[in-house]
Image (cartoon, rainbow, N blue to C red; front, top):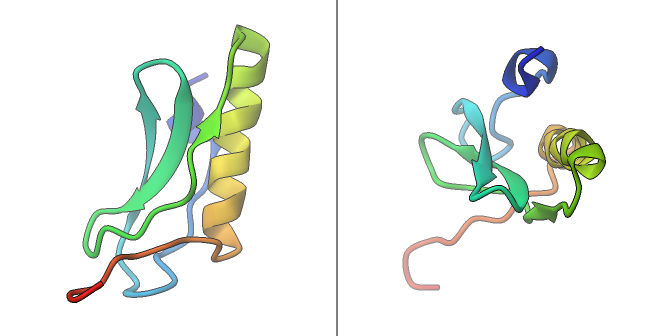
Length: 74
C-alpha cells in the first residue's frame, strides 16, 4: 500500500493549509504545507526497512505541530 494513503496528515498548525508528505531523492521524508511552506525536519533512512518508519515519523511530527516556517525578514 502507498504510504501517502496510509498516513493521515492534519492541517498546517500555522495556516490551516494541507500538508504534503514528500520523499527526497530516496534518502528522507518530510511534510510541507502547500500554502505557507512550513515543514518538518527531514527524517532520514538508509534501508528499505527504515523507509516506512521515517515516513511515519515525519507524519507524526507534522501532526503534533513540530514544524518550522521562515517568515519575511528572517
